[in-house]
Length: 208
Image (cartoon, rainbow, N blue to C red; front, side, top):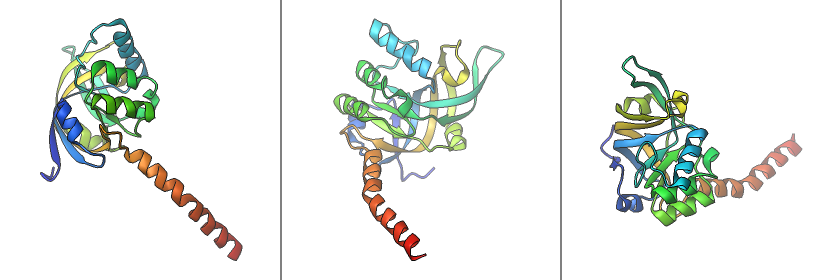
């Protein structure tokens, strides 16, 4: 990977999170926590509401919407064959609670999060990291070790997993800790361009 990208040690500090801006491109080193499962996110909300510690520490860390195709190993471990992002908007209703309760500094996946999540991120000092959809070879190659696995009763894709990574990315800061969202910007640009596109299509149809 190019050294032109900013490298961030995970879990990132609150100061690092606030120093990033929407559109920045980074590489991640260190440790991340991942899951692609709605049941998993619901269990974590249950931990927060009951005042229980989650099975893998989240305080001040990351919770990334990344799924893995994995297999259990003979020694009781987990071998990740590939890792890819899942759509974060499935978790919109639950993420503000987790962001605030655990003081997360980084969440992520693909597709962004809604205004309620963005408000929680700005309040806490948390960024949304946008992963390349279909970039499984890049994401998977960055995994150096599986550190911890929780919720083994769930399918591997849904388990809560702590991974060691090196050079994970490139990853785009899709939403920064100041409320700026690339997703909102792109949607606004698309809305602004739509009338012109429709007018051009109508003119082309009429001329034909």
